[in-house]
Length: 100
Image (cartoon, rainbow, N blue to C red; front, side):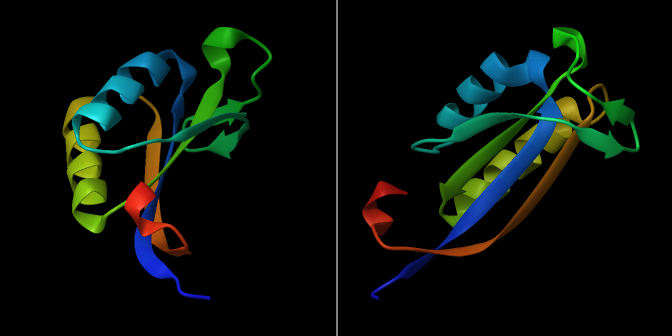
């Protein structure tokens, strides 16, 4: 396997931010993303997704480390104060690095 390293950036946040996040992520240089509905419990309480306003999304972006850092910095400055949001990242091995 001839793999290359990229960063997997994962953002868990309120579903109401989906369209804004997509725009932000693309404007900051990400070539793609995956979004899924999710539920759980954390500092903001339980998110069981029974109502649309109470649901969370999980956004995953595979990109170069500098893009992941730019996205993280921007989201932290723009959304952390007013929205429930968790961001975490790690290195991943990819087989088609040109896609990311």
